[in-house]
Length: 200
Image 1 (cartoon, rainbow, N blue to C red):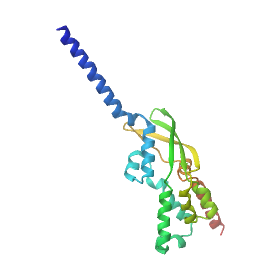
Image 2: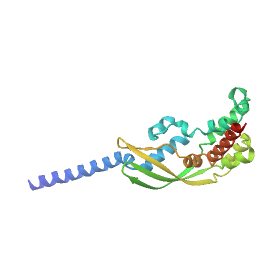
Image 3: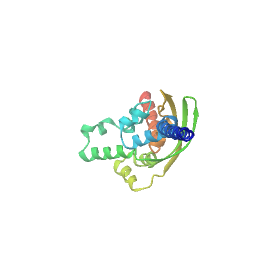
């Protein structure tokens, strides 16, 4: 009888351990915001809008950098129906290159239902090159033969909803890091362009 009870206790202990391990494995992605940021960034680099939406509280339009570029450039020169086939292909390749970044996940903090995760983004120096070449697509695409030398640390904010972490709407610093310094440069150009238009 004692041996039987001992066996039952041991079996119960093993079952408890198995359930604990299973529960930890199931809840880990929900309990750790850095996992959400990892999934979000992987979704961005793979152009997977569904996976982005599963981990992001904002909208995909928040980091549609190509639209921002075309907003700055002369619409009469960049309208899709007025571009040559080669120019359209270059725009397509350049749009894809905007999301070809690497990243390293750093430290994170959790404060109730909010959290932050530090990430170092390694991207092509797109902003600097865009400024130097006046947006020449061929020159920008040549960056793919170089290193991703634009490295900057940025902090992502997260919120918890129904037990799951979501990346909040991207900050300007987030957007600038992801776009290789392009976002701040284009934003400044657009502001100058708008100010000039208002003066006229």
